[in-house]
Amino acid sequence: MIGLLAANACYFAIGACITRRLGLAYIAGVAAVGIATAHLALIHVPIGLLELVVLAVALLLYRWRRRPIRPVLPGPPGVAAGVLLVLVLALLVKAAAAFAVRPLIEWDGWAIWAMKARALFDFGGAQHDVFTTAPYAPLQHPLLLPSLEATGFRAIGSYDGTLIHLQLALLALGFAVGLWTLLRERVAAPLAAVAVFAIVTAESVLRQLAGNLADIPLALFVALGLVCLGRWVLEHDRGLLALAALFLGAATLTKPEGLLFAAAALLAATVAWRRDLLWGALAVVAMYAPWRIFVAANGLQNQEYSLGDALRPSYLADRSERLRPALSGVWHQVWASGWSWLVPFALVSLAAALLARKWRLSAFAVVWAVLSFCGIVLVFWISVVPIQLTLLWAAYRTVASLVIGAAALAPLLAGEAWRTTRIRAASVERSTEPSPSPVSVASSSGS
Amino acid sequence: MITLTRAAVVVAFAVALVSGAKDYRATWHWLSGQRAQFVHFSDAERRQEPGVAQLLPVDAFEFFRSHLEKGDRYVVEAQPRNFQTGVDAAQATRIFSRYYLLPAIQVADPARADFVISVGVDPHTAGVPLARVWKFGGGQYFVGAVRK
Picture 1: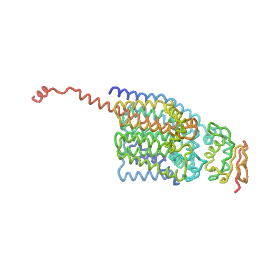
Picture 2: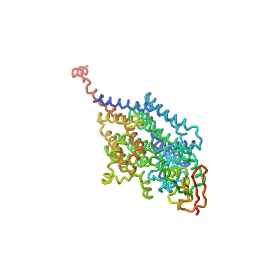
Picture 3: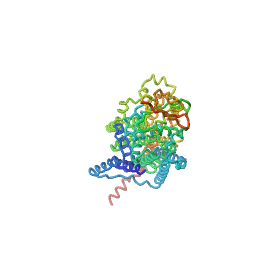
Picture 4: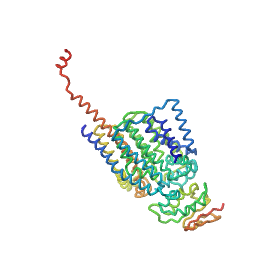
């Protein structure tokens, strides 16, 4: 366990060289190391604790010599937000205690993700039959999560399918702190805290995370990328765009659907078009490209669907009977009780932003959500797996990014609405204040 | 409009608060239950749980594993029969093998295999010459070493 914690300390140190926001350092470090190790796995370069320590020290020295790091801490939360954050922390500590003893149980958790992680640990990279031949299908899943877990196994010194769940609990903690940090800079502390509280406590979040499936890690990266991008829409801060690119890049390498959610986010961000956005999009493409090249070079086929089929009207028409169940199945899962009231939270926040005429941010949120929803439905529509089976197996978790992403954007929407009402109320107050009469002005100036 | 907007923000805050409060206890209890259920498991039980949870004969897979070393290539021969929705028993055996028998490598073509692993069928049905066959005491599970 000490090795795993040491590796995670390195993620934090590396992240602290990427961003000055200390609250984001850990999750940014996880994303950066995850991306790097996933790519290095493609060329058979395994990364262990020694390499991580050397990299972290080198980066810290470089940053210290070039420009001293002035870390920025999030502001004090206040009592109400503080209570909510303590509750979140308590739940995540509880989760870590449970995850540390919970073995692999869920089918895809061991059959896909742990199997790939173990193979990366055993063989040092992906140039191997395990990643390229039919008995190990599905082969189209990218390698960020398995690479991260394989790095953990190297840090521990052996394969441990139970202890590695701690990495997932730490990921949730990193997400909670990161989201709080991003939101707190822009919205009132209680609103930021209640969003973190609502997302982390929603029953499906920690339950699904415990299964060692990649859907929740994907959703966490998507949500952080979305909030960064949402803030970029408001502020045009290049630092936030860079962070958005990092998290969305990590999302593309976590699951194939990550590409859908990232592309939807970048398209939605064009509502506040600036040339910077193009650089952000190119950065995401650059992070995704090595995996795509590996897939093409090894002829790895997605056996369930081909996105090209979505552009063939005849194919879609032939499978038109799948549209209705796909639509209703995904819709049903978005509203499933496991997500608690995250969707209503997002919708009411959107309504507040629309009432406050925050058109740009609202458009960003709506375009992303609609594109993502339609994209998920499309994937179920074009899949060759019987519709009832694929909905049963995958719909409940495929919607995680949509629900968590929308809930993460909600406090930005509500916060902007609140800020606007305060500004408008202040301007109304100023305009209704009685102006001094000419007589009194003259008498006072004369005295 | 200002009042309406503020009301919407307050409602959004309330919805999020109720959302979290509503699920907090259930999530807490679920986590407590998970720890209570698994904290007393031995290392071996934890390792075997993926198969045990799917009602797979993990003892047989231990037997398979005892004959394989890192890099050994094996092919799985199994009788297709009902297992669970969407997955037959042969498929489940292959999928569990590829995880549980790592770092040995599963292959589809018997001609590439060093070993034949069979469940419920004679390993000779793989169509490759076998130098030796071991049978598991607890059922119709076999490991056959391919003659090279």
